[in-house]
Length: 265
Image 1 (cartoon, one colour):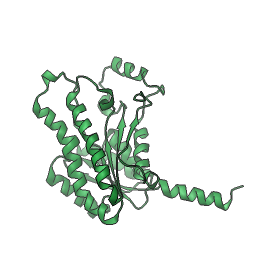
Image 2: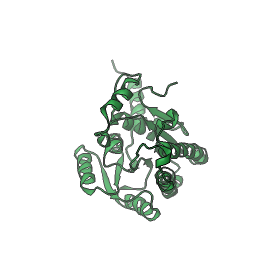
Image 3: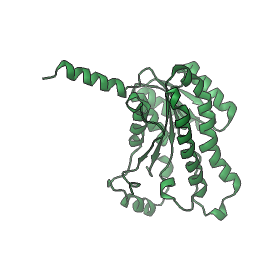
Image 4: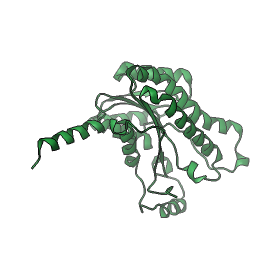
């Protein structure tokens, strides 16, 4: 028999995990993990701004799927590494669906594996632009709203490559390591404002851009996952949705690996 106490407990849990009344901006969310994150936040009740930079047709298809699933949001185009674009993106989101309460820094460029001799500084700089400059510009743009209301969530999408020290990948690993350090510093800085800053680091979760990856590399990676299965995009979306809600209100500066236990050691 369900008692009133049981119902009160369930209602309290529902509130902790609900994002109703919140507005989220997920960068690079027209495909892959970003799209899954947007879907998870929408399912939790948030209004979500889906962001893209180049492929308009793909973005419109993703947004149509998002709306067809019964979610609310908007579609906004712009580069997350250009200051003027970032300011415009945030202003458009606020105009269309409200001030950004939840920022998910997800957008990423191509990530070729190369020995250090084959990189140049321009490529290193492009990685720093996406994983240091972008979080800085985006956070600076949304913080006035978050600070005014005394509530906010900044969630950086990192990578297990920092913990694993993956070779022939130095530019990406270095930039993601820097993003992790920035995440920790901002968590301390913004905690008094009741704004949490956390990082979710997926493992290798096959999405569209992995379709042409060598099968032998996929098989080798899959064999090392302790949980014995591939991760799926919804695994990452669930972790982000948890950090975005009130259930994670006392968690900040944390780094959650979503990789089936590959970085347990």
